Image 1: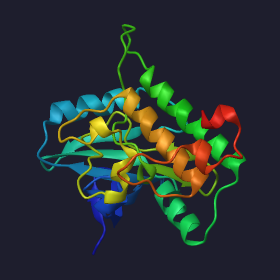
Image 2: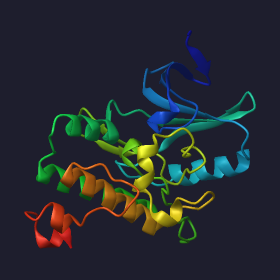
Image 3: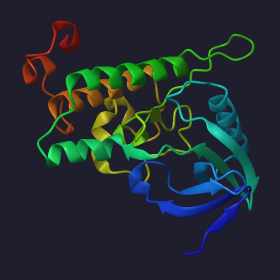
Image 4: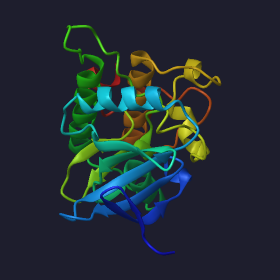
Length: 232
């Protein structure tokens, strides 16, 4: 399929919806400086709502939050462009580790957890110019929306952007990472739900087990060797 040009970007590789990065996403590059990007097309939605969400997300800066670089309307759709982190999604890494009977070193999991928690806290604490809370939450956080670059950088995609990163087409294995109250159709994300998702992600990393629909075994039981302050 030939490359497609949208705005200042040349889009190349389509990303399947099962990857969790949107239902109409492509990898591409800026036609001028060659910057690698993740581009999304959003059809059939209220453009004003989408544009407001993009502006709010772009105003929150953190090295582990994927910010929109640019957004615009073209051909009756909204296009949003994000930086692309070259590496693996966390779900891909977890699959590789499980297949080979491996786990990340605990020290690496501690570091990853601290990075993710700091990024989510930054979004939740964000305020506008009037000092009012923006209430930026993720709502659909799971390993498929976390990228780990070959350079070690960790980035979360989708914070504050539920309409750009919907559940449609996602790997169903990502469902159990969501808090039970958020699995209802139409349920909106909450900060508590993001904390639940992060806890389940860390549980999967520490145990090497894929979460199911039922409550996970207590970490203190699955990993009795971990410090009390971790498994509490």
